Structure formats: C-alpha cells, structure tokens
Length: 235
Image 1 (spheres, rainbow, N blue to C red):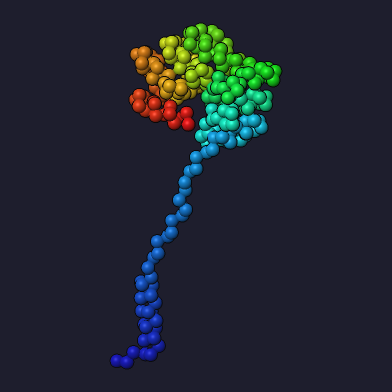
Image 2 (image 1 turned 90 degrees about the vertical axis):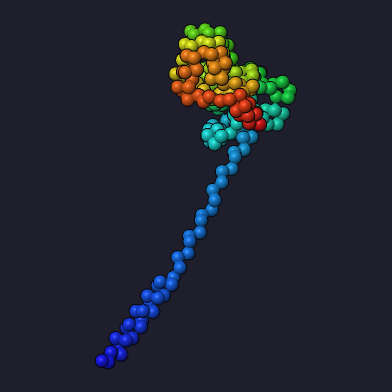
C-alpha cells in the first residue's frame, strides 16, 4: 500500500520537531547577586547629631550605630547634640543608652557643654538621668516615679555605664525594678564591666528580680559571654 507523499512529509516534520524539543536542555537560572550587609559607620552619627538631623540619627541608630561612638578628640554624639542645643536628638540618644559622663580629651562632657552654653532644657534632661540613676540605686521609689513622670530618660547611662535598672537590681529594689520595666527599661543594657541587671540580680540570688527580668526578655549569659559582648560594645 502506497502512502501519500504529503502524509510522509507531515510525519517527517512532526518527528523532527519532537526530537528538537526533547533535545533542548534547560539551563539553570543564574543566581542573583549575593546580598551582603555592610556594617554601619557609627562615626556618621556624630556629625548627624551635631547638625540636629534627627531623621538621620534615627536611621543610623535603627541600623545599629553605636550610640556612644567616639570621634575626634573623643567627642560623642550626645556631646555634639548638647553643644548644638538639639534637645530632641539628645533625648533620642539618651533613650538609646547614651552616657552622660563620657569625657573628651580636654575633660568636657555633654553636661558641661549644656551648662556652659546655658542650654537649660538639655541641662535638665541630662541632670535627670543622673538623678534617676541615683534614686534607683537608693531605692527611693517616689523620686523615681516623679522623675519618670517629668520625662527623665530611663535608659540614659552614667558612670561606668550604669543605668537606673542596673542600680535598682543591684540594690534589690523590687518595686523600682518593676516600675522601670513597666516603662520599657532596656533589659539588655550592659555596664562597662559587662554586667547586666540580670547578671547582677543572679549574683545577688534575688529570685524575684531575676524572674521579672527574664519575663521581660533578659537572656541568661555566662561570664565569658558577658565579657565578650562588653568588649565588642567598647569598640
């Protein structure tokens, strides 16, 4: 039986197309560019604070900039904000753990800049930090309450990196610790020696304060871990 020429041609074309289709090899898609995170340059925070650029300061802090970074002559962002009378920038820096006692090479501090420039609001803001830390350490509940109600920065730091929370934990003042935690005190704040409110309360075997801190998210650390984290924060 003879097969029509047209049918034969169609069979050849169909077979050839199928072979070509099957012979195509799917090439793996090339991976996109590898995303790498670049550590933020914390020193940029100093000129941003000096300029009173609160938007830039917020951005840098959210990206992980070190709030107590040192610049030329050991200046800090808080010193620059105090010198320039940038109240809201100073408040933001304190809320993020800025230290009011750090000194430049010439001995100037954020406090002395604010006082010498007669920047009364910033002077009061900085003094409140010191007063709050002292009152928390002494266990003076009412002054602590009053200072917080006036807008004192709970997370501002004093000598040796102390905070109101670390001092209250050291003194075993349960009600003050509770008050500070209710106002969102930073449970991760670390003194210059690496101690946190939690490590202090654990060392004093104060189970009530320890439980309160852990409930708020404080993490138990070994001595080696505390020392390593303290060293990283100081650089």
